[in-house]
Length: 392
Image 1 (tube, helix red, strand yellow):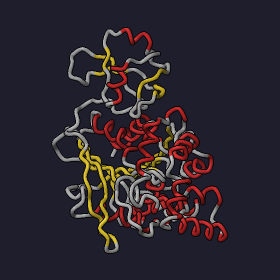
Image 2 (cartoon, helix red, strand yellow):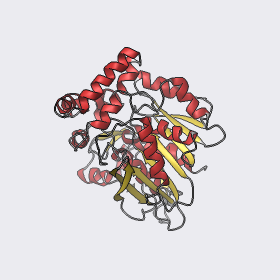
Image 3 (tube, helix red, strand yellow):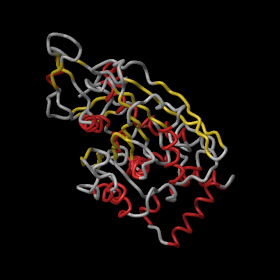
Image 4 (cartoon, helix red, strand yellow):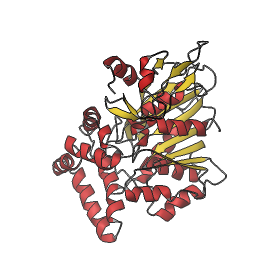
């Protein structure tokens, strides 16, 4: 089915199409897939059924098409557009500018705070949570929420100084960001819901286990604990030596940039990674998405943190046993939702699925996607988040 230019533009801006007595209904059967435009201009499969709604205040029910893989279905207007800002993190005599985005629902009363942490990767960015955030805050029942998405130090639009990035540094940052008297969450009178993808989820659980952060709940989306090289080649002493050599080489002034340009900072490499294992459907990887991620790799100091991630220095634990123990420590203390994905790479999926029925996991679900379901299938992730959050 062809989608008009106007319809595509309408959907790309995250609005909710409402159709009444339209000939389109004849080609939008509730159970059949079709295609609609998504945030990067790609046509994504549409599987969410058409449903009735009176969300727009009309007395006559209208049929609303709710995208499953695109931006928010707007039920209530947001209080304001997303606010971007920076927070200064003081670490080892360095002042590191941290990028964050903040958005509130339309309710002017007390807010429930949600912190969303991007999946730690070569090209980690707040962008991956934007569609989910807009959807959650737009739903009936989500208008009294406030969401903050933050770029990790060394990633996204945050500063990338030449420091020794490791799991302890990332945990320290998360603790400081949540507890800072001058931070974006400073006005919160309640505990925060922490939502993280990949290593970010395990890092949040690690901090909560130690009692360093107070969380109302934790959501682990496609959680991982092993970096790209360790999960494939293991952690034998000979491999650790090679990882150390590669990490040092990537941080070197001239050689490091050359290697980084070959391994990470080129559009073909980024496109290949997203099509092979980051996204579940290669058709969902658009040129604009690749360009967006590529631009991040050209920022000053962009290679330092990815060098640590690739070689396993950012891994929050060293084994599956330790991974499971992190969650077990939260049993009866903090509600934990785990979202596995249907098409994650084999090794990563094995670690996700090890959490099915594990101690400390309150709820386990499976959603479409691979390693970035929150960006590729935001509607599915948002649906599960909304059901979990409204029960808190």
